Length: 135
Picture 1 (cartoon, helix red, strand yellow):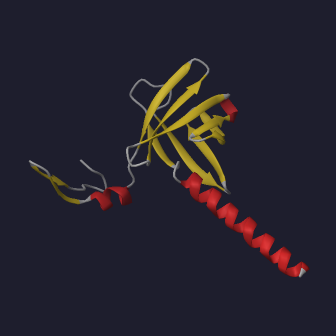
Picture 2 (tube, rainbow, N blue to C red):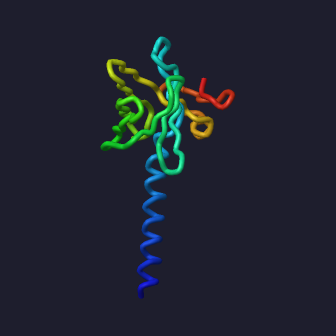
Picture 3 (tube, rainbow, N blue to C red):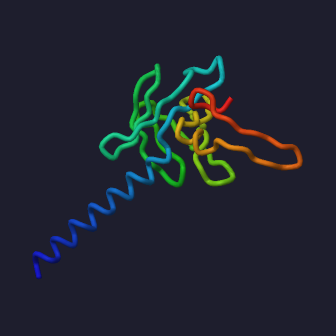
């Protein structure tokens, strides 16, 4: 019985870790900021179950506060991820001291490929993918 409880506990812990990593995966990607911003882009990655942000200004862990809000620990700042109407993460607002930046998530090639095709409304509109990106 004791072995069963230990085995069940191990499976529960592993499942919880995988779910946590999956939920953080949605934030990963490259975020592009407008010309003239403090940094041109920020790369958000998942490494050993931890979310990290990298830019020309440096690197920092992102620690979840609540919802889509994270602390940028190395810079005493905040990152608030934004979502589209379908609930997918599509941008981020970063505040560090008196700097406020709004960036858009770059669409991955695989996401762009999923959108390839023709979509019709009152005007026929074709969506194509060029070099792994939408034009």
